[in-house]
Image 1 (spheres, chains in turn blue, brown):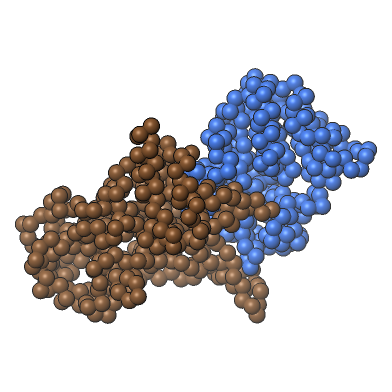
Image 2: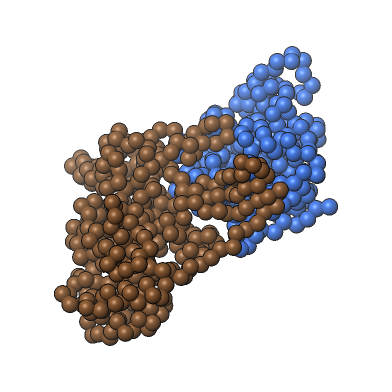
Length: 274
Length: 329
């Protein structure tokens, strides 16, 4: 049974208890947990996840509201390693949703190009699920998903479904296994992008992935004639409060937690290191 | 704004009356001047501004956000002590108003609000810049206080009433705060010697090589942000009991943008890796970024970050030099 989340009105720091209802390993260092939370949010937003005694960290939402809240997590730090140990029935704490996501209403009647690298695909999965439920509002949908190796491919079950519904390209940087069954191309996502016939006509592009990958992707897009205001990136920063007070996530004068994490590229393009 | 008169012969009796009414915190001179609870009127020191800012009484160095035990969270009961802060300078009063904007108007932070809401602010207006590093006159400060004492006359202070809380105090201590026809003129509100930064707009200086002078001397020691009356960055972390790891508390601690780990994400990537980026971030947050969101500069020109810097980086001089060099070109 899902329950509606309510944000603690008196105290913005207090997270609410919830339980894990499903756990699924996606790759050797990546897993998805499903929580008994029904949360109204837009794709691209995030929640603050707490394990008392370990700490708190921001995690992007990889599902769309009709379902129970899903979080896709890569094990890279103390919090995410601890989260990886959670199993069905375990409890954790959540507050949110926070941030400025993908304003899907604004992109109606456009062609969408969705480009994700590694665990950067997680917030974009929320976009894909949104599009599935509002399919008539959008025209052609291209997905470009890049992973390091076959083992790192995320959402393997969903991939086949996406392949049937959209223009899907999956790449793997190195194919250690030789023959391979996800119809993935060996090579960088940027090469796949370069070789595709996409153009900037009536299109918006969503990019999420490691900073290096995003930089190269944006370069390719610009070579193909895309304008900065057609590109939307999702930024990652350290954050504690998630409501614009602690200042850790500032990109110059902007706050990743309230002005982002989704930024139109021209808003932040000069500020990569700030 | 109502103006009252406090005769200097009544000053000690007035302070004593304040102490008898509630806790009074004012600058006290020990090894350095700092804000402390006072017991006697003679404890008040007004010769120089406090070395440490008053922010630690509202935005506390360490705050328990909640306690946890076996996966149950409990929120501490927040108390709102009635306190008078006496002898605050204009820079520090404005600094409080800037932190109010963040923690009371925008975020509604219950911890800050509980410390702040029953606090009364009584200012002491500088007759001249109390330190050679002051530049408050350049920061376009506002009148922000409950009461403000102006020490312009031999026998009496003029006292301006700046808020509803100020009216409460004026009424409560009417025995000492008397009616007068005197007014404090705008001229008398100027603070001579505190206009070192004639042009604080640094928007077009970001890529100027002139910053390097400060960057080269910066140790990333974080004294500037700790001494700043306005800096409000913080961390949240969980502290557990050694004997029971499922019991502990989530605490909020002061942080500093000058530390490398301030922007370190999982996987150890640091966004502001270079000292230059961190150094400029502080100055730009103070003089540019804050204004984008709150329509006022965060910095109030108290000069503590310069006075307390172990290598005496005077960013005001650095900005002035860059402006002058630019004008020459």
